[in-house]
Image (cartoon, one colour):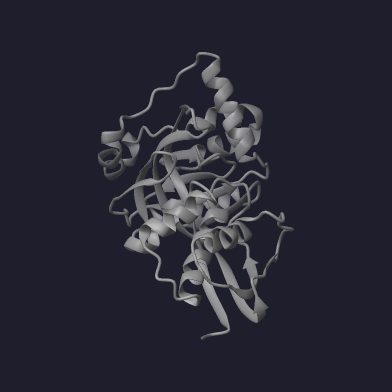
Length: 288
């Protein structure tokens, strides 16, 4: 068996994200289109002498002890009747932490597939999903991408109901990183307060999401529940959206629970012009 594995973990964006009021089990159901983008983390896994230990290191941040890699390792062991190898996992972080781009969940899914190969466990989809349920709701999508060789889907439930759809190839994204951090816990708390106040939002119906996605971007009416509640607290998000609109983005929104904001372009020339205009004021990158 190889002693070193190099794997990639793609980011995702949300095109619309309807968050429903909290369920009795404490989770929120969602309705969204998830799409992977070309921004990726890299994971280098080295096998060391020994058993059942996993050391995780990141090049750009200090990870908490309960990070998604260690959580995946613990969850994986619940479903295999064997010792695991001793491993060192080094993460080259390109997906910003706390950006609403699913970086930690994608890292977890890619690591889980590496574990499955290293241990020759030949997991079924059900087993992959059982591990995902113990790590994080976005992990389901990234697992499904790998199992079905897909990269775009309508996602419902708490994130575990996934309907793959054809990914458009004509879209270019300009990502803006406002430099503020809103935790997932805080974001959902603000949404709960929004619903408890009696306020409502208008969303496109679930059965129309795919046809809207495939239609003209100028007609996109996707809505992210988090955008209004998070941007009220962190004004930089609001300004980033406005700057993208001013510089030719056909559609703009925040991804996930934030704080990354993205603009959609059809022309590579328009994308580059917007990037050049915004790069002096914002931390930006282009993706497809």
